[in-house]
Image (cartoon, rainbow, N blue to C red; front, top):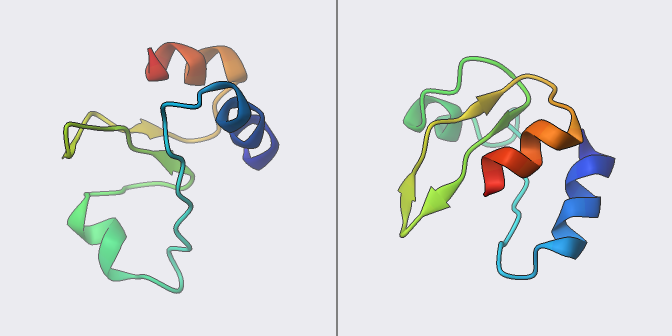
Length: 66
């Protein structure tokens, strides 16, 4: 999903994308109840929104971001 997210990162200048390696940061998946990888979590006003779990096509990610 990396190439799709990188493409969208260039298009959505008002959204900051961050990548977390779950193996290197094992406490974060538990903190945000991540049940599968990959998982996208949108934070709005500092609060996590419902996650998007599993590989997603670009159209789903665009809808999620809007």
